[in-house]
Length: 228
Image (cartoon, rainbow, N blue to C red; front, side, top):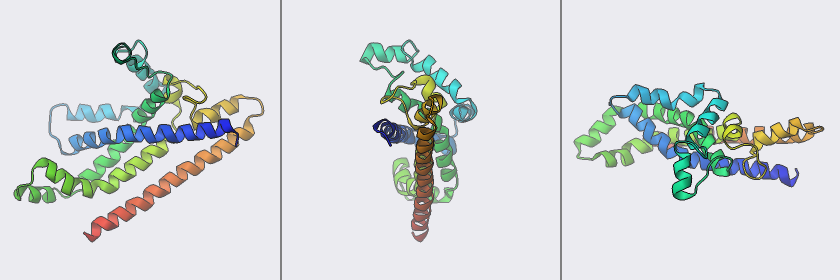
């Protein structure tokens, strides 16, 4: 592949890794709140975090422009206070991917948390363990397979994100042109079919490796938890 094609591949890996690193802790906290919490607005929160799954990605990108754009509600404050601009930057691509894969990660973790026997938490509480101790020693180890799967699936999904990224971060080579955008650009160029084919094969290989890794590690962790 050409240096430009490698650049798109490496940028995709970087953006996907940062999107998961940024979104996974928030997804874990949100899943914990929805799975274990009982508070007013819980159903509304659950519906809100799932919106990116049902909205067209372009609409999600447009909403990001409204909120985090140069003159957006939060974007204007970030620029004035810290000189931070997210739109049309690599950080913007990371944000767009993180928002799009957040519901996938959150839902996977939530299902893992809901599968844990509540009696285990109750037993730890009866022995005097506070909430943080129970979370670290009981809940998190048992939910680890789901958290890991959420991370890998989120990474794989980020590699394929297109609509929200091109709407919010544009298609700038070396800065925001991820693998899907590079494929799109190649298809719009005369004689670019070969480039699109090469990049598509790379995309398929990366996604397949991520999903196989997710399955392998999840089974390994579940076996380890079962032996305990």
